[in-house]
Structure formats: C-alpha cells, structure tokens
Image (cartoon, rainbow, N blue to C red; front, side):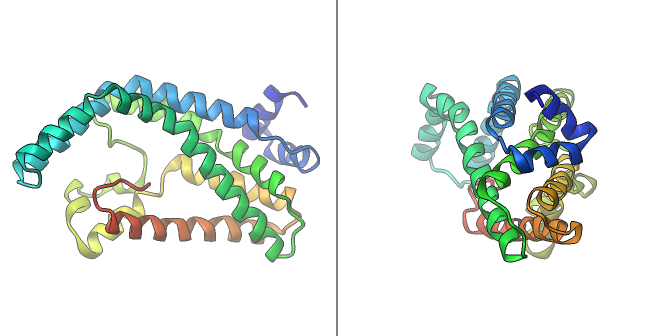
Length: 235
C-alpha cells in the first residue's frame, strides 16, 4: 500500500489502513504532512495572530498589569525576528513531542488492558489519526480570515457567551472543558480508538475507553496548568 493510498484510506477505509499498520507500522510521512500544513496555516494567519497579541498587550497595559518598562520589553519581544523564527520552528517540534507522548501512553495502556501493542504501532495510529487536523487547519484558517479573529473555532465553547472565558470559578472551567470538544478533535479520537483496537488487538470498547480516558485526563491536566500558569494558553 503506497503512502497516498494509506492517507486516503484513513478517510475512506480506516479499518483497512489500521490492519495494514498492524503489520507494517509507519509514522513519518503523516507526521510530515501535518507538520507542513500546521506551519503553512500558521504562516497564513500570522499577521492576524500578531495583531491579536498586540491587542492582548494593549489591554494588559490599560488594566495596569504591566508597568511602562515591562510594556516596552513585551512590545520589543513581539517585534523580534528571533521570536518569529521560534514561533514557526517550535510548531513541528511540539507536534513531534505530543505524538511521541500519546504513542507512549497508548502503548502502555493497551498492554495494561491485555493487548499486544508496540510503541511503533501506537506512533503510527497517532500520526495517521492526526491527519484529520490538516482539514481542521484549512477550515480554521478560512474562519480566521472571515472573522478576523484568531480565537474562532468549531468547539462547543463557541455556543457560550464569550465573557465566560474570564468569568472565573465553575463557569470558566465549564468554558474550558467545552473548548476541547472540537469537531476535528473528536473525529481524530474516534479514528485513534479504532486504530488502537485493531493494531493492538483490543476490543472496540477497550479501545474507545483507553483513548477517551487518556483524553479526559489531558483535559483535566491542561485546565489545572492553565490555572497555575495563567499567562499561558494550554490547549
């Protein structure tokens, strides 16, 4: 099965793809495709992203959260070429670290549940499932251009009032939880569950249970981290 057919089978015949990956797991080509599209999509929306960061800094200055010296340093940092290079270069690196970590947990979890998974199979399942985010990047880039808003998306938090993001307490936690329920994220998780079941010889229920339990743990961890490091976005 050539690389193009493997990619197409993810959307047309995922069972056939994952059966192939059970015998011949590969991961680099789908990782490369997702990494390239991620950087390309970011490059397209970068001017809007930069404007958003300026707006955030302006609001922080207006609210008195930054003094004059801190504000000058922050604005200079935004305009630094080094920062721009880091913004682009870090994306494929972070993507690689994330899929390695996901593959590790799928490998460990599947064996704990009685499967016969390998780390390489887990890596293949995660890498191919992430191809869904290529479509997500295309759709979200179009939405960003239409709305001129870097925070647009297709997650469930968008049906709630925007001020809930800063409401604090229980309402803010609900907003953050729903922010993880993105159309493409759920699609990728479903494919990952099917892939784990097939490649690691688990029942379908155990495959779904493993993937969605790990996702739930990640949501909880990301919310805690976002509260501890409130100046950073964890998603």
